[in-house]
Length: 91
Image 1 (spheres, rainbow, N blue to C red):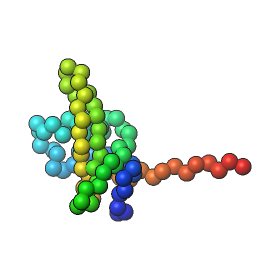
Image 2: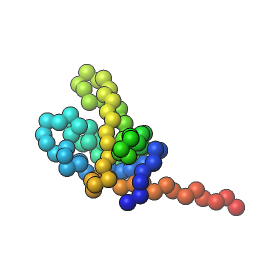
Image 3: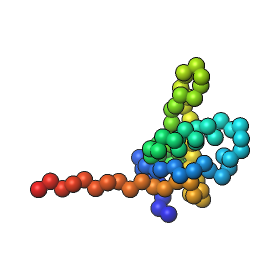
């Protein structure tokens, strides 16, 4: 698998193995991200080479938005890199 770079897009396919425990706040975040069916953009690569993406969504009943930073691990099978579409050449 190729290394991800900042601004690459990935599509989440499932909840990561470590997040299957009930009651974790990130479980709700992953469920909402999967329901959106849109790719997420890599925002940062840390010093260990781990790609991170951020998301903001309304999770609270009072309507306030929450901000989350989540990491992707190369070992996980829960995401794929989105291939960029080629632009049509104008003749």
